[in-house]
Image (cartoon, each protein chain N blue to C red):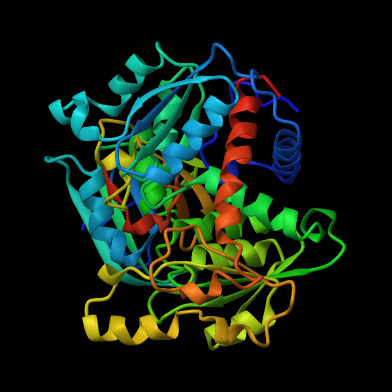
Length: 308
Length: 156
């Protein structure tokens, strides 16, 4: 399977076999890293909007494999502010780098970039649309915890909780999970439910989606709980936000009836939706999940630069 | 009423034209949009809306005198009225009648309805892929990956 020079834009561009190949290469690189694998290669990180976590994780991934990094993390310091088009910025940067990681506030910016650039583009988040490296790290985390995901020996139950309407990570993860033997539970405040487009996608893939009445029902009935943050700006009424926030908060006391192997994931940053007392339980797995971002991004970069 | 060839005895709901194009089976609410889209500023246009239709319940008909459609107009028509049929009229005779061909992809025909789509902020072409159709026709923006009812898009 050849990924050389391939853009990584959207999880929808990857087949089940390709996803499995990426997960297997991630496992390989995590267990036996090759520190000079990308020596002499340059990665440009173009962050038109800030994202400390994603940028640092890509940069660490590249540097741990011997590659170098150039880039910016604030569009205010670039020619974009002077009115330069995105296409022109890319035509300039592609001269300097072997791979470009881009975060941009507009939906579809990464796809546009891929039509301009002669070097591969890795989408580090385009507006509310896609963030494929996050999805690969979510899948890798689930597959490491539950090998059933990839061997198909059991139907895994995965619950999504919180803002399922605007949370782009849940949309991409849902699409990716449609390739596997899973059952999905969802729980979201009114108005922030999973968009129909994704429910249709699950239905087409014959993946059962059940809306459960409360966060407690999701906790008690799943193998993996994927928690997301509620954003205050989505609620016109601050009182309503306070009320709903309280019913979308996990605390250690709510984990009594959870399956012993149940794990909680979260794309981070968390605010109040997971109480600090959950961190010390065996169910907390969100920090380990973030750690998986390094090998996943190493595998993606290694594959598209033809080094893996 | 203009003189019609023999046999056309039934009462017409919309004026006949001697030469030009008849667009039939338009979803009724789209009729005005179709007329505006296809007719030039000096064209004679005849229109019917909310006409009874066994296919659509209610339909619109637009007749444009002295004009045949360009390829681009046909693509635009396919996006906003995918159920329509196009008849070419010459000397009061229907010389061809075909359903509007709905392509699998629309390029530079409409703007994306997602205000945050990159195509609404950079000078770039738009592209929509058909995901389901025809009634309603659902399309998906190639860039922002959002799906829309084609009828909700604004033509360029």
